[in-house]
Image 1: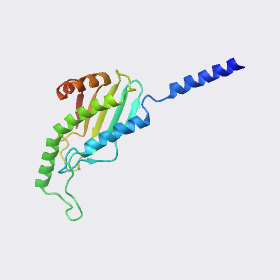
Image 2: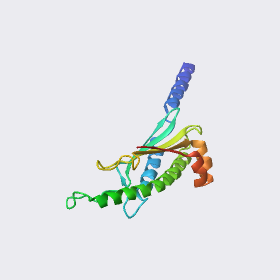
Image 3: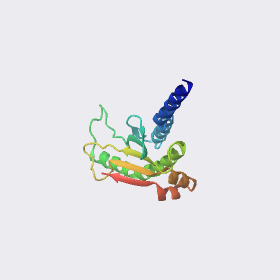
Image 4: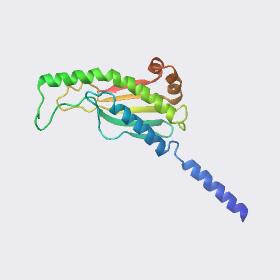
Length: 178
């Protein structure tokens, strides 16, 4: 009887270990908060509009994917000023275009920091951050990307992080979608 109980107990532990998530929700929350905090304080004179909190998920066999929606610059529209002039629209477009290179640099640093923070992710799995950059209906869709994605394998990102931004440029792949 004791043998059967021991076998049953061992099987229960094996099953519960197989069901344990590779990335705990607590770990993911820390990474999400770091991403949110960093994106919110990128530009003090016209802060980014983080539309809701970022969300991360671990996909077995692929890796970690974290998504967020960020407005690079907000239009000065209010009840007292319901429309924008053409000059305002040009200035907003210019500001968004100027911020994209800094956003990409920050995303490379964040994806590397995420790779380091998520210790339980296998080194060959990917770490991906995907940002959606919403547009106003009047904006030129070809001017500013709608989505920016940065990704790399966890091990390559950790190794490159030691070498700085130049090393990250080699391993953190960035793609844009208009």
